[in-house]
Image 1 (cartoon, rainbow, N blue to C red):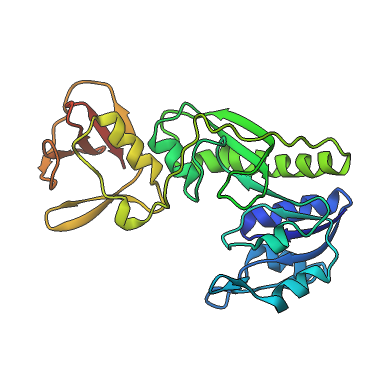
Image 2: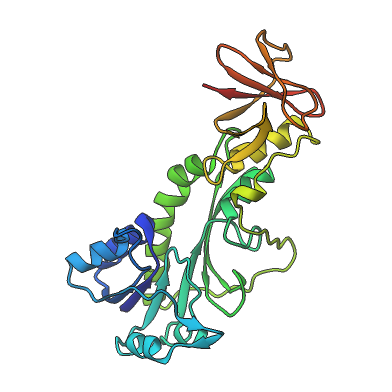
Length: 291
């Protein structure tokens, strides 16, 4: 098929490369403008292959589609849009243009955790199962019909990085290739998302990642690992903002010896030990930040 790849990052680059290996013709790549003089990996790879690369800063302005931008897209004659990782808002005039429509990768088991910080919230909520969804784009936010889903177990100390690198990245690339193959073969399903179990959470930013100490240790651990390393869970201690990483739930029951660290709003002071920092939930259970 003739495919337009719309997105960015190493994930987008890998999906692009695998689709070309499958024999599809990538007629154009649409990615973000260079950041601080550095081009996105997806655009760089396409340029090496001589594939047309477009770096539109936006597709719309003041709610209106930019006609010249859409015209450049339409001139390529794409039969399918593939959005492996896309941070831009793509207008429906582009989403609906190809005869096969558009498919999007999302790193959660939709309809749970719609929104841009799906991996963070999967961990923050302490989900035991995670995974990804490839769905048909519509005019909602992660609400389109389901094409393909794959799930994985979430380990107790998984972080955003470990979950992404272990499963969501490698298996997601395979999933995107499989989804395009199903479309090419005329076998791709369109399953409406159930509204039961649907959730939407906002984007996690540094200002929203402050730790709430009025909760059990397990919830604090999930909050820390769900923000590790971006944007980073934080709290105030000794007049400074401290960012916490690499947490594990401590079930030993014995408080180790060390120096007390008063933390603003915490149930009790933390303990600085030779192995790291021990924090306490309001249930007096411990979370250990390992060195």
